[in-house]
Length: 306
Image (cartoon, rainbow, N blue to C red):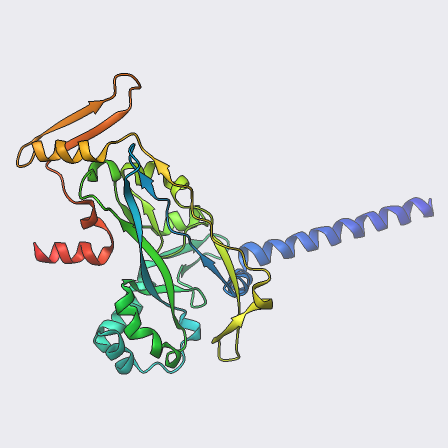
């Protein structure tokens, strides 16, 4: 009897310890946000490298969608120390008020979430996470800023790319890209604030085929949170891999000719290869140059013009 009693005592103790550990894990992962923030902070010691989107060719091998290099000026608020707002504003060509408004807009843009376990509503914005402060800078614009960034802790440049359309035709086929929203970032970890996603046309249809595979670069920071080099000389880094090119059945010259025929008219033209069923041209009029919808800065300029 004593042996059975001891067995039950050990069994109860084992069950209680298991319940204790499970409860603690639940508290750390679901209820207490500080552990999630700590994991995020550790993750930010690595930089994700997003490859350019896949290049697209028409049926004759003519490049109809390519990429052009741009830069984002990134910021991590936790690393910003004693920012001279006026000097920084002069560096980027803004006013001090515009700089302060940009900080506010980034925080507001991240939205808020409700934790049903704690009953608290908090901001999605995290001071330890990088956010694009200025997007879509050209190489010339970044060249005026980059040499002085070491004087502004918490800011760094990030290489990115945007679409370029060698032919001003086929906008209805190509579609366009737009910045991801909060829900898309939460749903797919490939994206982060400031990333772009296909919104229409083949840019949307082939989104996962276009985006390629991200690379990872691990960094070492100083006590002042400045990047001092690669971790283990890049031993654990991985290269970003661009997705393979895609070839469409469209004939861009025929597409351009169809758009010329319908210039200043309303209508559509569909040209099909009867032997294969491939669409050679898909013209819709009125139309526009697809390059006009590349980048938020360009779109804002067009809106302001009209």
